[in-house]
Length: 291
Ligand code: RIB
Image (cartoon, rainbow, N blue to C red; front, side, top):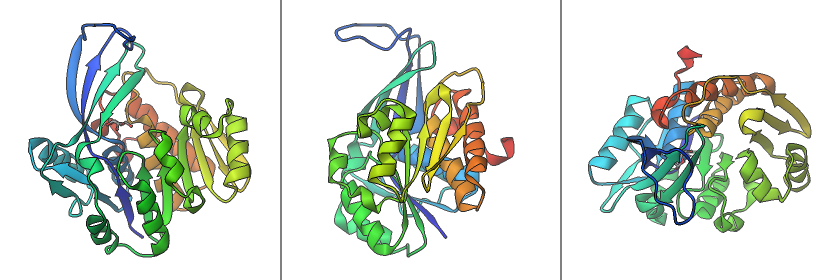
C-alpha cells in the first residue's frame, strides 16, 4: 500500500500581529518568517513522519522557492520524484498569527493551480487499487482527480479545505474518509454543533468515516454511525498553522496500521498538540519518536 498525496506546496509568509487585520486597517507586524507550507506539503510531511510510505504529487515553480519546497519534502522522507516543476511562481500565502496564536490565511495558488490532464495521467500510472490518495482543496481540477482516483480503486481521503463553491463539482459519494474542522463542518452542513454536523454526514454520506476537529474542544470521529471523542492535550499554543494537517497524517497512520479509532484520535491529538507549540507549518510537525 502506497499513499499518494496530490496537493499544494506553498511558501508561507507568516506575520506576527497584535490582532487579525480589520477592513481598511494598517498595522505593523512585529516579526516575519518564511516557512514551507501548503496543506498538501504539510500533510505529506505529517504522513511520512508518522511512518507511511508517502508520495507527493503537485507542482512548484522552477525557481529557488520551488527548490526550497522540494528540499523540505525530501528532508522529511517524502518521495518527490512525481513533483512537477513549471515556469511560473510557486503557490504562496500571507498568514497573520495573532497574540493568541490564532491565524488567518490569504492564499495565492500559483503553480498549484496549473495542473493538467497529461500530468495527472502520469501520476496515476504509478498507483493502483488498494493505494490511498489524500486530497485537499488547494489544487485545480480536484473533481477530476477524485474521479480518476475512484476509477483506480484507491481509498480516497478528502480534507475539503479551504471550503469554497468549487467543492460542489466534486462527487462526495466517492470519498471514504473526510477530515474537516468545525468551521468547514458548519459551512458544509449548515449546522453549528458537532452533533448536528455529524448527523448531517450520517444522513448524506453514511459510509464515509468522518473526522471532525474542534480546536480547543478536541476532536471526534464517526465510523459506521458510532461517534468517538478525544479531548485536546493542553499545551501553550504558539502557532496553530498545520495543526489540522498534522492531525490528518497521524490519524491516517494509526488507522491504516489497524489501530482502533480511539487510538488513532489519541495519537493525532498528541501530534497536533506538539505542532501548535512550535512556530511554522511543515517544520513544526513532530517525528513519531517525539510522541
Ligand atoms: O493548513 C495550513 C496551510 O494552509 C498553510 O501552510 C498554508 O500554506 C495554507 O495552505
